Length: 445
Image (cartoon, rainbow, N blue to C red; front, side):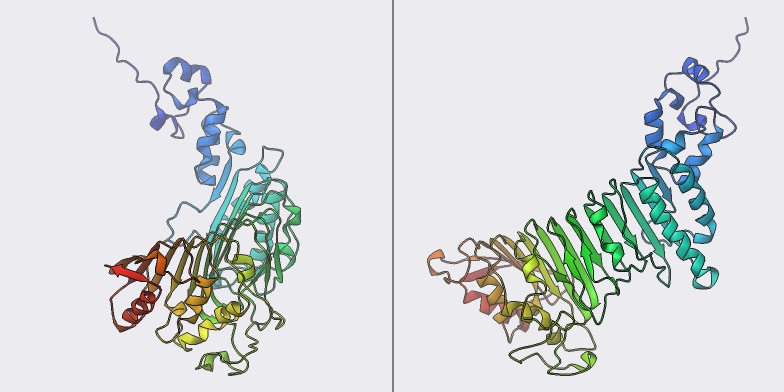
């Protein structure tokens, strides 16, 4: 007796193909319990949240049940599945789609967990005014209408489209990541965003803001941004837990008190705007270290005798302080801001882990290193990264206190771990090791 061939039940791989839809939910349930259509709506919406927005919207053709599932997905993602090494897709191909999907998603749906927009455009192939209007619409609509908890806007472009000079208002926004935009002063007044905890600013133009202010902010990252050459930006974030300032040039921001700070990374590099008027009117031509008694290297901060960084960093438990050289100025010139700070240096009463590079312990001047060690009474671990770029080092030496009884009185009695990392043990490194030996610290490679 001839038997008809058995029909294989629809699986996840076949059920998602347009044109081979699920049909009704009853048919899928009768076919197999392993069908993706047997999953609850909440699970399907969660899965759609991992897709790019155009792909998620296409699922509406699968069946009547799928028609509106994408509108309840927890995330909208545009052009964000490319690896970091690839250029995001062009604005021209997505701008109308982004407009429409944000409008549809904001029409009374549940709050959006994530809105992730990463686009690019060639300089000669875009209307600047149109791009600015659209970018501002995306930001405002995602925050206000879609109630996004996390907003990421990444514009890979030659010019910075600027955001409107108005603050945001949202009870839902907890994370904001901006890249490639120009931001004005009022935008950084986050008093209308009481839930905001994370702010990432990467390769943005921040030349206009005078202050970043948020009582709720816990994590702040400012990396490779353009800052003002004339006016020092102030950061008021009393609840901050972690801080990263990776600055290439211009004036270093001034930090208000941060009593909750646990860890901070500060790199001042390239052409810092903090220079000494007593030496040279042109910072690019400065060729010597600052020796004046009342240095005005706090240029742009009013010239007052107060710390720019250390008042805010003094409560940190883990701290990285790095100054990167430039080929246009003397390496010593980059120490001006840090030396200014050390003249009114507060006590780092909670600091347990400290990482410095060679600009804190040049072979001819160990004063900055001694000063910060004296102001760190509970320090437990010190790492010196000398004359090399991490994270890989050819040589790593571990030091220890030879005799606790002979420890200098000005050095923390808790300091038990000292590390030195370098590419090679040359004459410069040997001078540093010799100085550390005067602090009763010996090393083994």
